[in-house]
Length: 243
Image (tube, rainbow, N blue to C red; front, side, top):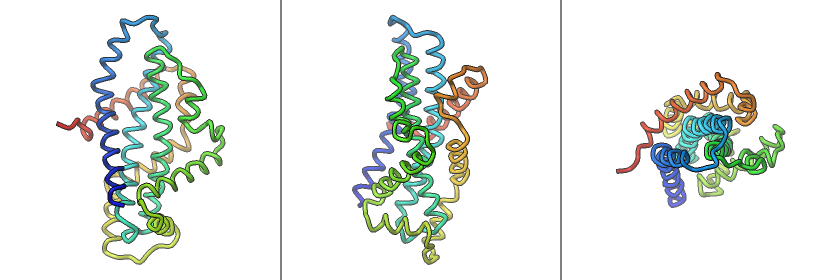
């Protein structure tokens, strides 16, 4: 169990460090080299690619990372420290982080394609954003996310017994103990409730990035760049390279 959790923690750290190097080292170098390679992509493709890349990085840093951290903190605490609200926050944070993980990966890949002059095939984008399996149907998306989340809970707990206890805590509140109260205080701090709320709003109320950018507009580019700037500031602060 401990080895499984340590492996997930190391994987999370590795992803953050790789993302940091991608943004601050590899991407500027690659874009500089791309200026001297022909044929060059059209201005529209580059602009659309940059905007979508910004949205993808924004999703990853502002939603995927904090939600995954919250889920890990919840499940790592063990079933004996769970309350009903903590169990639901952990479950929802894992579900939302997995959803935005897929959509952010699709946005980043499609954005890089636009910037470098290669088109990412629509079937590939649909697979990355789960549309290939859900065909845009809400019920299918929720069912798929629930199935993936259940597997994620099992990976986090590394135990069928602990997984069942975590799921049981969603509907049957355990006895309130000091570890339960401590865990509730930890989970409810650091704006975790607001993060889950905004993630739910993004899931339900916002269109897919590809649909959002289908009709170009200056205000869309401005919003995307602001999201990207805030995400980069957060990433630079919390995920600096290891010395």
